Structures are given as structure tokens and as C-alpha cells.
Length: 184
Ligand code: 5GP
Ligand code: MG
Ligand code: MG
Image (cartoon, rainbow, N blue to C red; front, side):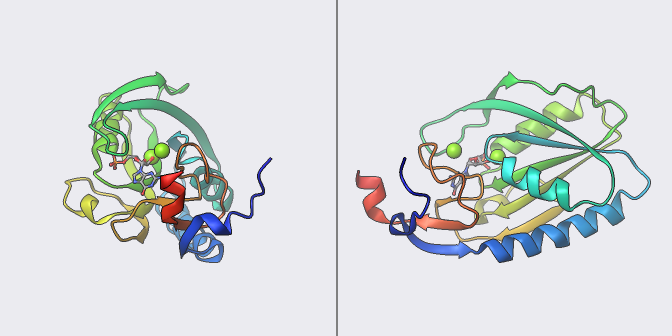
């Protein structure tokens, strides 16, 4: 197996592990306060959001339930199209529940916007979004991300759940890839 010390593959680290974990604690405090006395269901879309889901849910002090969806987005390579197919639906009926979508990154926001529309038809008591990262494109969309971790530049990043060809998801930090990785 290749070593996890992938230093050679990264051009730079954008967000360190310490910065991520500090931000997770900050977001968890806000979420704990906002949902005090309410039952909260965290919903994450596989696979990019698993790290945020794992860390955020453990940083929360209140009881929460977790559920996952898997979707496939028809698009050309790295761009999503907004046309989405559900590969695995939620196990839970979310009607009347307070739902918080936990996201890795919002870029075009197309997938998220589809997800919000889809979940809204199931009549949750409330529906909000927490995303650990947001790119500049996302700011142009109508999507209201209630809890946001970091605004990052318009670069392709990996780590903390985000992949390039299914690699780098297990890096505890976020960075950009060195050019030689793409030319392999
Ligand atoms: P959007 O629909 O907002 O354009 O992006 C949807 C998904 O594309 C994100 O949840 C994420 O999985 C992936 N994505 C967007 N930007 C990046 C990026 O910079 N790096 C990686 N690895 N994936 C990204
Ligand atoms: Mg995602
Ligand atoms: Mg990906």
C-alpha cells in the first residue's frame, strides 16, 4: 500500500487539521445553541461529507440522529450538472423533523440545490445546511448555507473527504494537488 504521507502530491495546504477541528467545534457550538431542546437529524451525502459528518456529530453535545444518501450526478467530469439520481435514499422519514444537511463543499451548488428541493417535498419541520467549505461560485447561487466553515478560492482541493479519483479523502487537512498528479 502507498504511504499516507502524500506530501509529494500536494502543491499546498489550504486548511490545516487544527484549523478544521477548531472550526468544527465553533460550528457545533452554534448548532447546539440553535437546536437546543429540538430533535435534530443530520443528513450527509456520501462520500465527500463523511469526515465532516463524523467530526461534527461527535462535537455536538446534544443527541442527534444520522442518516446518509448516495446520489450520482450526471455531469462532465469535475463539473456537476444538477441532474441527480438517488442511489441510496434516506432510511428515515424526515417529515416533521429538524433536518440539517451536512456538506463537504458547495461549488456550483447544483447538487445541493437539487437535494434541498427533494428533501423539502418530504415536509421536514425545518431544513438548513452546514458546509465545511464554500467556493466563490456558490455565493452567486440562491442557496442559503446557514453554517459555513471556510470560504476558499476557486481551486480544485482534496482531503478531508474530498477526492481526486477516489484518493486523498483520508487526508485530515485540505490542499491542492501538484501538477504532476494530474499528468500521471
Ligand atoms: P457542486 O454541485 O456544488 O458544484 O459540487 C458538488 C460536489 O462536487 C461536492 O459535494 C464535491 O463532492 C464535489 N466538488 C466540488 N468542488 C470540489 C473540489 O474542489 N474538490 C473535490 N475533490 N470535489 C469537489
Ligand atoms: Mg457533497
Ligand atoms: Mg469527487
